[in-house]
Image (cartoon, rainbow, N blue to C red; front, side, top):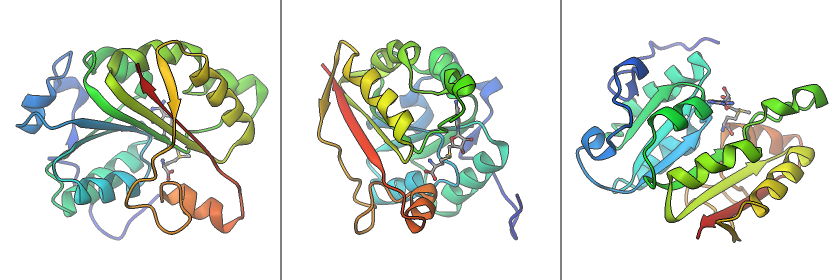
Length: 207
Ligand SMILES: C[S@@+](CC[C@H](N)C(=O)[O-])C[C@H]1O[C@@H](n2cnc3c(N)ncnc32)[C@H](O)[C@@H]1O
């Protein structure tokens, strides 16, 4: 992957090696605004549009692909999103090691990798063993939102979320930055929409 401009990661992109465990979000952002976390932001369309539109919310992005992490961090920097930070890390590890209890207002997961081959299904992010971490990091009444184009993965996501004690399924909230007929308005959504793929969404709140 290449761009025609230099990608500058700092000050949005953080070095995981230099972070305190657990993180102190108030120290990190210099305020105690609510924190919304996105896993796998790719090129960062959603997190950037949200961080621009909602300056009184802190956004945190976790992305493990180096190019996308750098691209997204640079994009947030170019838009002066002082209310955003990102890390290059595997989300399960990062949440477990760094994200404090009851610290997240909304967990956003849009178009997670579906790992379609049966023998790879165990690599999917949203599965039973991920849910205790979700419950731990969400504040009371905090929300998780997931959108996918993959029917089989959605069946799993829907089943796992509905069977998690402590989560109650609620209406999915379309972010204000989503365009007409869009669920979120991410790069993948726009690409898949042109191909005519159907999407599914689910949202739940912590009791
Ligand atoms: C299919 S892409 C979707 C990107 C973006 N959300 C969108 O809709 O355009 C999935 C992204 O999640 C990232 N990703 C997948 N699993 C991850 C994990 N366990 N931790 C961090 N990032 C992950 C991938 O590198 C990729 O950028």
